[in-house]
Image (cartoon, rainbow, N blue to C red; front, side, top):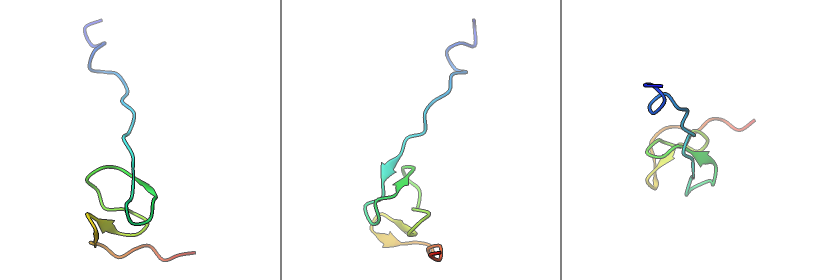
Length: 48
């Protein structure tokens, strides 16, 4: 009973990438297009 408050599972927050629209966690670069805050910060994955 003592651990009931802080051992709960919290859902992951997702937002839409402003560049490509893919879901991405806040404050992280998009894994599909490589943009963060309107600029490209890493190379995007090659399209299959």
